[in-house]
Image (cartoon, rainbow, N blue to C red; front, side):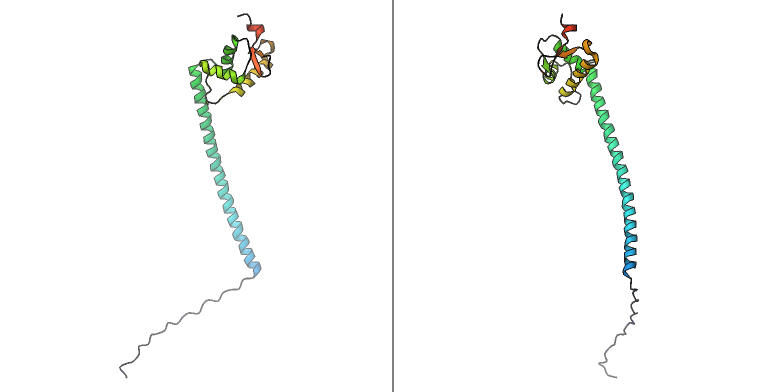
Amino acid sequence: MSKNKKKTKKRKNHEAAPETKAFTPAEIAAEAAEAAAKAAETAEYALAELHGKYMEICNVVREAKINAMKAAKNAVSAANPGMTILDAAFLVLHHRFTGLDAKQMIQAITERGFWKNPMGLPAWDTLHAGIIREIRECGETARFAHGEKKGTFVANPELYGDD
């Protein structure tokens, strides 16, 4: 034997690759449909769960807003016990001979400190609707009457004109 004998590596016997089964297009479509149905069911469940959590959050936010408005309203009521926006508007109109519209009344009410909106926003549309409602419901015994110009109101002269 020669000194330069090459070392031969033992070759590993490679196992033959497993034979792959050929799928028909119908089988592939059936598997895809089954996978899609499972994915849709999972997505539907997740969506329902998220919707439930969203509704819970909406309810919590709604309750927080309601509680904040009630607290603000109670704070204003404590500062002016028994004074509503209509009472304040009547105080402003009682000794005036000219009619005021709702925006002018709100300005006069807030300047005199008779009433303050709990939410800090102008409430002229609420005041206007309240006065109209009182005139419609109480008729001749209402504290307010329509002024000469459209959209203006005065204290009812039949009831409070002699003061």
